[in-house]
Image (cartoon, rainbow, N blue to C red; front, side):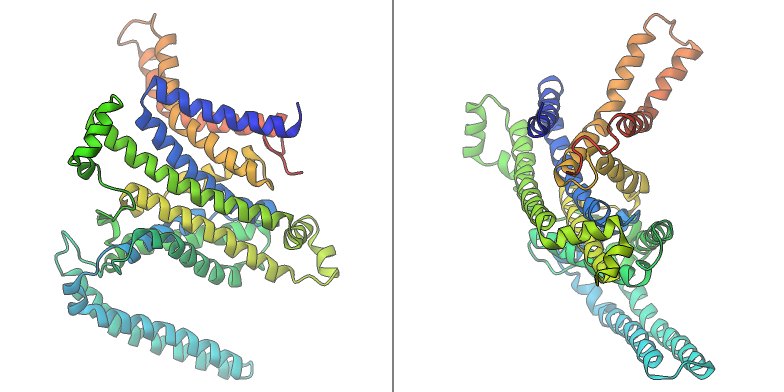
Length: 434
């Protein structure tokens, strides 16, 4: 079997698995798996740019995904006029003061000669700026969060179309990646992983605790959608008539229509990003990145600025993760910072890249679809298998109860087994790098 035929067969297998889910369970479930598979493939594509192209070990994926979700709130939610009137200017003035303090400290560091005087001057500037910043910022935050805390308690957004939030999510993640990269990309791979994980946790902590920004753990619900609402479709006589002609009731038809609309939008974004990633891979820039990945010392000896190139690809990969985060929050219709767990947005995405094929964009996409399908379906399949195997045991048996309770852990067990099998029999992934 040639490589092209094998690759097509693997994608056909994943498509068949999703189709079987539609026939045996429901098309709602199949479309949900498809939509999250598309988003997962985009995340895996972003991580593959960083690891597969440049060898950067980033385990702060969930931080960039969360920033994409935050962008959805900041762009699409309508502004809360009462909150802005109560303390919006104070919040903005405080943030401006904090930024000015950091900029002033950086300028002072550059203009003064190294020594004790510079250290003391920078320290005094930072301490004074911090207290001034808090004196301006805290009253504004308190005033904003007192405005109807059960329903709003935050500043809201710009009230723009939600589709604009997707590129803005990428820009927000790219800006954070630039800050992180300027401080952490000089570290070795293991220290870079620790740094990115710590910074991601800081981002999540800010989202959870700063209610004025996005309501913290109270969550932002009712985000605008780029597709129609089901109830509007159900009240449309033309849609109801077409659904009946196809043999669907209005409720089922409206749900399928909305999820199919999301799938089309997500597929368009994935195809555009995949095309751009393939162009980058086959360009001189892509060949240079792989040369740096394989031997940094040799590339640097040839005059390549390794740190700068690492920063470029780190920003690009993080931006793609930010776009995926904005898309996922749009699909959910709400921002819930408590759901940004390392297991879901770090370990799982890394498994997708490793299983699919590190350094191969199509492999990353395949891994995104396959691993997400297994992540969703393994637990119910495992429960069915255990129920079948224990059917002969008496009800109330301690062994039977223990095995049935263990079905919840089938996801983790399966991910570990798949990872071990792929690393043993196809260590470069299902679709390896050429």
